[in-house]
Amino acid sequence: MPITIVNVGYRSTNYWVVSAGTSRLLVDLGFPGSMGEMRANLRRAGVPLEEIRYALATHYHIDHAGLAQELKHAGVPLLVIDLQLPAIPLMKRWTKPHDRFVDITLDDNVVISAAESRARLAAIGIAGDIVPTPGHSDDSV
Ligand SMILES: [Zn+2]
Image 1 (cartoon, rainbow, N blue to C red):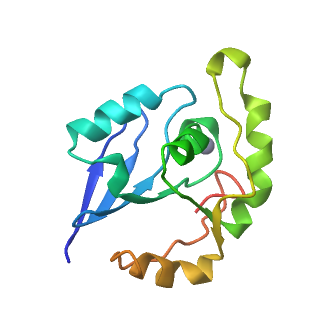
Image 2 (image 1 turned 180 degrees about the vertical axis):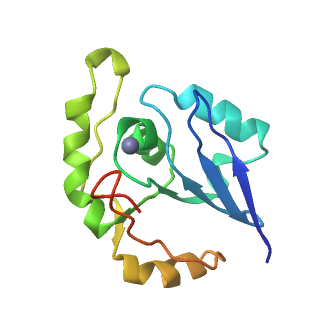
């Protein structure tokens, strides 16, 4: 199955839908409080939310993981690489009440190691690895 990649970003930030047919991975997860914009851009790109098998944040800064919990509420499982776990609780430090950030719960995510990512992605039809790329932040993948 060929892989397609579509940008559904907004506010100068890229959010990517990686698809194998209708099996999809959303890479980077929007600003806090922007679920309406994300939904609109997914609709415009012809991507039903129900077809997104996992949401993956490349790192836990608010412009890349701001909608993680709201996407979970909408039925999209959050795929977390274990090395990202310490960064998640730190996110709310960088948010203010008017951001409408919904804090990310830790007990209901799909947590795997980077080494396990190839098999996990293969199971949804996507050939690839999730690799640690520390630099911008310790939790970047
Ligand atoms: Zn960042």
